[in-house]
Structures are given as structure tokens and as C-alpha cells.
Length: 73
Image (cartoon, rainbow, N blue to C red; front, side, top):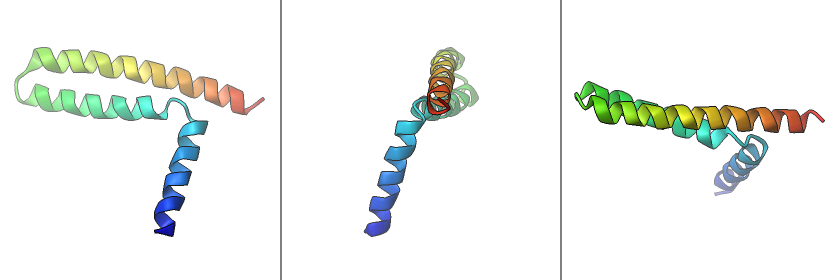
């Protein structure tokens, strides 16, 4: 039980320091789903998911850059 609380606290701490991390995780999930839909032959939906994945990655990288610059002041 103590280990679980420690993990939860560490995760919250990590996400509060790295603002873009959730968006990068969403990017990876969306891109994986897009690859799955592409493999199943649903190219239109896969393309749409890939576009949203790209937007999520751009936002995540931008937020990571901001949090990096903020932490180095």
C-alpha cells in the first residue's frame, strides 16, 4: 500500500513538472490506434487519428519546452 502511494505521489510530481507529458502519451496512444485502423483497412479514420496525434505531439513538445525553460530560471 505504501509503495502505491509513493508511485502516485511520484507520478503527480512528474506530471506537474513536465506539462507536456500527458499530451505525448496521448500522441503515442492515438498513433498506435491509427496504425491499428490502417492495418484493418480503414485508411480515412487512421488518417484522422494521425492528424490528432500530430496536434497532440506539437502541443506536448511546446509545453515541455515551456516547463524546461521555466525550471532552468
